[in-house]
Image (cartoon, rainbow, N blue to C red; front, side):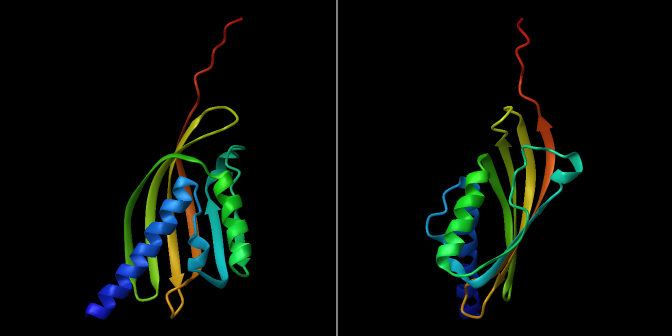
Length: 151
């Protein structure tokens, strides 16, 4: 039982480090947790409202090695700047895990505030590195910035 607990605790620690990096915009050294050939998949509901401020890197990306993973993560983080975020829990079972995070970000072009939730699913290799991360973001609301209509 102690071995399982230690393994789950280590995976929880890796997930927390990755979630904090993604949401804070500072990749640090999280690329070391990704296995060669790791797959990163991003999706969102932003397309349904055709919001130009949601310039995320959607799709599926296979990352070949730590250098490519660092480049990818740096670009992803550059495009996703959050004002605040709150982790809402992590579940771990065997070599799979899931985590949810609520967030608020500001549109750089018009100042609107955007709130949403992102679900993350993690797949681990037998040696404890991440083989896949899938994220699905859902935007809850867009609060327009106040406009000054002074003539």
